[in-house]
Image (cartoon, rainbow, N blue to C red; front, side, top):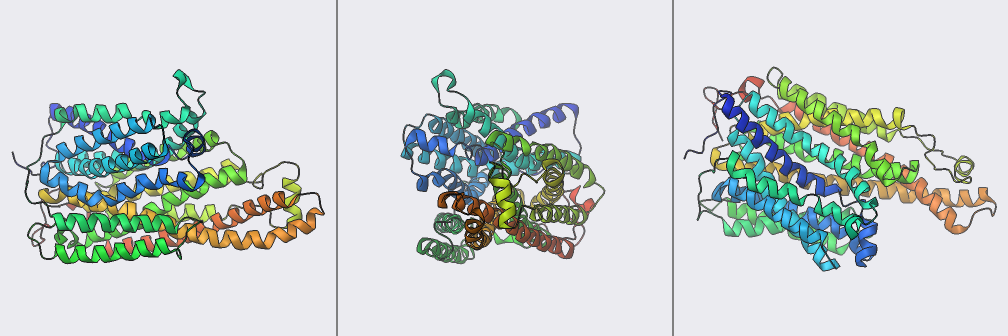
Length: 535
């Protein structure tokens, strides 16, 4: 069996039907992976109460998944190239489903955290294999553009739907005698099983290259990424930060291991990460921008969801529904991008997309709350929320939609550029690199923005607390003053983080406009123009 990508758009009706069902399976897998990154967030307090997990360890329910997901992506992508993309895809979604079942049935902290780690491992196998299956199953042109549009849309849809499902399922009153939070894990089990069972029907297996696994590279690369993601996650947490010994040690160890990894890769015959995939300037540009862009989206979901709850006063479920327009707009923008890419160069789509996202972040940075102690007290003294003057329809919704349009215009062309003209035997690792850039970039961005937010939040809270105490004239307890000052500080920290995110997106836009020069005609074919090498 050959392992070459199909020729552009020569598709019979029977093949079209098969491709459509193949896309359904890949979409389900991607939805499952992204969904689980947010669905458990709202359930954390309930999980902690049920399983007696203290507050300090609750964050590992989120971090444990992100850690193994980000750390094993390169290895997952290479395993797909060596042992068969369909096999690794099936193994990944099946492992994810089983781990989700164990998580939903967890009786203690160790059992739940272990399940989350194995969920991340399953996702690290399934996600790059799914992306590689698109590149090698769908013919270049309309079919592949549509497939990548759906894949990209799932990233935003899954995150937003995860918030809604998490809020709804957590609030269920023990149906069938099962605590509501357990359904946040159990709901993805049938998705994984369906994807694993039907994959052989709609995907051909790729050529295998058993015996070529670069074990030293796999060890140093995987543990290097694990250390980097762990260090970045610690850097973004208030109780640790960038100056903590564990943060510094982890980041230094990660950099050292990745340095050793690069040395090994430059000398082995069959490297885990063939450096030839970086030789294309356009692909390298896509990788770089895809490190920055997800950070903006993570910042929006993280800080805005907290802002809406703590400052504006929304319930968890109401907050989830507030993000639903993001899913709708993301589907529209990704679909639009998949059609425009046939006639518009990626530079213009991604360049405009980054500018739209930057505008959205700037809009979020302008969210206004009372500034003086007297105004703050007049709002909060009667039980109101600090953000009562923030109107969802005029101050939040337009920028959520703008962000979604920007993300869709970014993800589709950049993903196409990143995997375009990769050698068939490198499509898995190429997809793994793209996913790794997104995960590490998102972790780095969130850690950076959390540091910014913490700095401004702390300064503002310390500044406003004595002013509130003087204005309250004994009408509020010190605890109440501290609570209000904390919310005021958080609002200032969040808007400052959005402003830094705006600057990051402007930087991404500059990179796109300066260095991304692939033409849309090239993306519609597998053959390179005369004199251009295929890497």
